[in-house]
Length: 115
Image: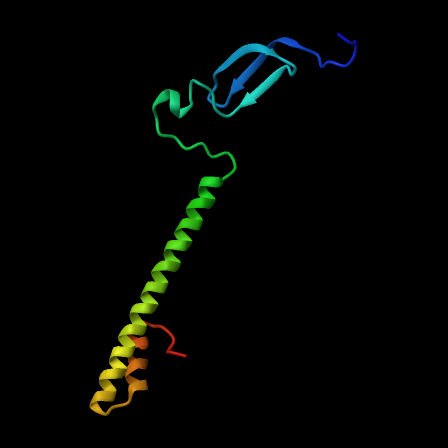
């Protein structure tokens, strides 16, 4: 082996998990910290557990809620538009004002009128 090119080897390096479990192994660093080990990993424990170290789950849930609310809003707008079109068609058939009938439907749902 060449001298002074290899890192220092620690034969009793300590591995420490976030669950509190620790053990000794050989490594080039004296201490290693980890988030999950065989004592707390869901595969080995059989538990359903979400490990969220960077807020990824929370960001995903916010994004999912936003998409679901946007979808619900779009569905409501489509429903209101269809109802307003039906009201306008019926008003025209009776000889009434189609714009007023459509505006009443939009007002019932507190939405701005058709553009």
